[in-house]
Picture 1 (cartoon, rainbow, N blue to C red):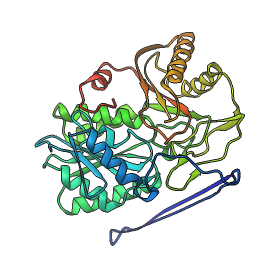
Picture 2: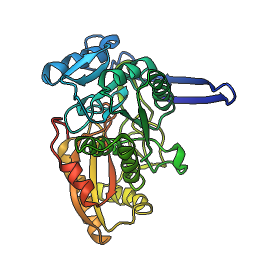
Picture 3: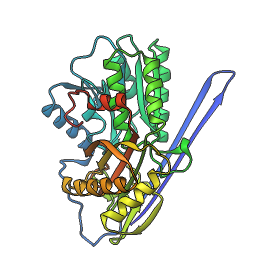
Picture 4: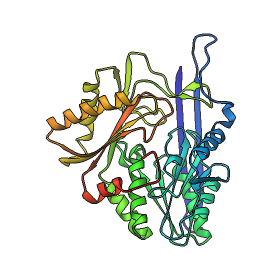
Length: 359
């Protein structure tokens, strides 16, 4: 199997006319080479109904949400005051983002098809649905399609006199250029921190400033043993040999820092921490051990043990652990580590109550 992904994002601007032309070309070609007759096994009814069926099931199990405009998840009871929070992106990262709609976290999540950005009109629907006059903060992972479409929705909302701000999450250190870094598992911490600030009456600009200050020092790196099986295509997200693992993997299967032979978990953890400690120097940490979707909790607990041992050797103290599936990549086997320098207020925000059952 060969995975060839090409992204081209061009934004042309005419300053005099305040005219913007956004062009996004996505070409994703995957050639599948499998044993003749082999079929991917997935618990779906129809691949064209994947997103709708998923949201229908989510609504059945969570009576505190509604689904509007087909693919926008909102709180059933709109809050009457306070900054509203909207996030979203392509599906396949569950429980992100729809699972985090609830008191103490998001007001709305805009769901695209699997690994596909939601369209600007859907984002605009979400903004208009949750706005109560106190402003709306968009929390966006740093992918070209997401950024472009949320920006366009922001512009359209502002034309309707809705106050909107946007923060872009760039926590993935697998990319050297900070501006090009991807938004990954740390995005969930941003949801929680922003939700806490909103619940405590902070204004829109204050929340944006405080969230960006927290993100400035938050870092993530991940790894994968296997690719995700994409139900809407019937193909795997990327090609990897049985004896290999990818260090620095993205949540859509993007290539990372290196591809090396599989090692025992202690050595894998050491590799990831070696990268993280170059950018997070605090001796006191908040740590997320995030599953990629196909990793059993037992193995995440094993990872946690060796992370704790390695950080102890490094003279680091972990003030709080968050272990589980927070930002996944369908059924990819692997995990990511997110480090946030300890701050009592930030930790209080992470531990504050939320009606989301996934945090």
